[in-house]
Image (cartoon, rainbow, N blue to C red):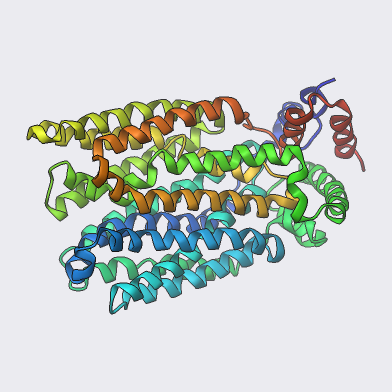
Length: 500
């Protein structure tokens, strides 16, 4: 007896949907789900906008502040202090999610982000600007934990990957929007202040919309607020599936309460299956950064200038093209993640990333030849990098991290994994220009290509396929990886799913 054959009656599982195909929820079938996802994903928009806007704003901040113009370290600090704030935000965001809920965590993130946007827009010197960057980072860090978990817990399992990836689309869409804003304000007095200050608008919009939205039904069940949870689920599922989902969630709520009574946060990693899940989730998050994505997004205008295009406006325009490809690639990822699967998509993505980074390295190795051909080759390398990265390694790490942890630890483990992402992000942001100055841009991209090869091997060895699996099937998958086939665990879950 295997997990695959015994879990056919778990609501949302592939076996269940084969038996009851009429209960399947399609991506566009329920406007309520799309609405919830769209509002929650504004957190992703904030994340992406801030990532992208600073690259263009930095070109003009250097014009206003002489100290910034003459200091690579100060430039890197202005970029990376938002990331430092995000590390703290992600670390506490997991706890806020578990203690106060996904809805309140989002509202708190919006307030902090708006405050940061105001401070940045009015900063009289680089040091107040850095303080504003820290506040914005705190908000982005909390949002980066909360949005994927909130969306995943509201999503039917058969479209969970696509819905969580919508948050990634908003991240890439935010980056694209930031480049449009950068171009729009290039001739406006106070250029960079407008670029940074406008970022507070989506946070204010999300704040008021979130007041109208419900809490995650799974979190409500975990807090014994079943009636509120059922009223939310009733807007997502038809009556027949609703009954099955409620029975399963009720059973799990009782089981999880017993586990919370016996296992505290301090010893969660004594569980081998959670260690394996965290290794896969946090490893993907680290490799997402160390394979160079935010090097490309933060410094793409600078890279374009390194390639020989010295006009600020032209650098921003070419970066806009790169950001547009990033958003378009994410749309493709939304389709593929629930069709090709998480693992295959990540492997395909990394293969293309490796080839693109080699092209970038070669173009900069030959930069001294003076040929404009290599400048355009660098731009082509950037575009190909984004084309391969965005559908796979752009979407897969956040999706996997929203679904691989047990319910009672989803906020905490998700927060820890997001913290790994932001720490890795900080290392890259704080070191790229300095490393490129020390060893050259070509060797730097070659180093990143070698890291991408290691990422490819990591995915092959440690990341299982979770396409179409319910949260319960994912939990059993980790138990199977940790202890081998365990029919008793599967049988127990089967009985719980059919208990009335």
